Length: 326
Image 1 (cartoon, rainbow, N blue to C red):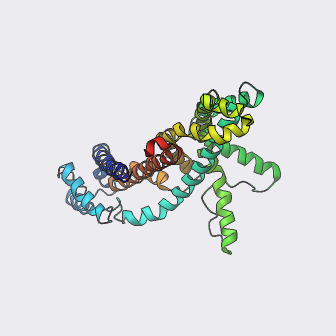
Image 2 (cartoon, rainbow, N blue to C red):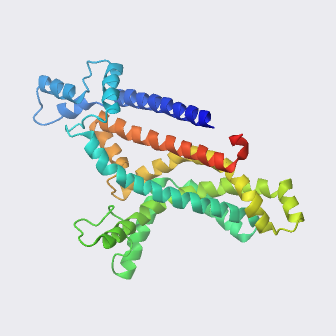
């Protein structure tokens, strides 16, 4: 098992290197930091622009692979470079990563948990009204783009607040600006701002995971070992909980590792629409400004989170399936 874990970590590190390399090459080819400086009024001299780009490590006269080598060597030592405005990328990254991680964790935990439970519930009640309602709900959510879903939730919050006459559901920012008070009230304030963005991420996860979990549970319900457990006196519900649920969760671990990127993409739209200062909104602003170093830093963060989700899925697979341990 230790050898398998070491191989998996080595494989993930190689994937991370390739991902960052591709991100750096694509960002360098698609973005134009030189245009960001040359479009200023008054237009700076070409020598000043060259000096600024060289200071940022973005000199377009240097081969892109050589620039990537310099950037990656600094990144290994904890320096992600400078933003287009000359500020340390590390400082901006530190301010924003906690915001995005909080949103991702809330949306992922709630969406995955409720999606699995809803899928099992629908499979047990196959063909009945709850199953049909969940099917309609899932297809409606999956057919709506994430940004449209976020806008609908925001409009719903506005309508609800107008109907009651005061703000009940927070829909802008990750905290109330200038708010003072003890930490319990601050925690409550941040939680109230988290509801709508987390719901945007979680709804998509519930819709997709419930469909896959329903199909996996239906396969288990028809298995011989479950019928044997019922023949020995267990009720269908207890037989499913003791001998079927664990088996049905095995394919869901693999699906989770591949589906986490969709959750991350949904969080980017949620941050932009709800004005959350996370890495998603930072990525969009950096791409508009031609800030290569900031774009690559966000790509590095997304690659790390996706690979960590894959490692977590592998760990859950080891726990759920004894055949993998052998």
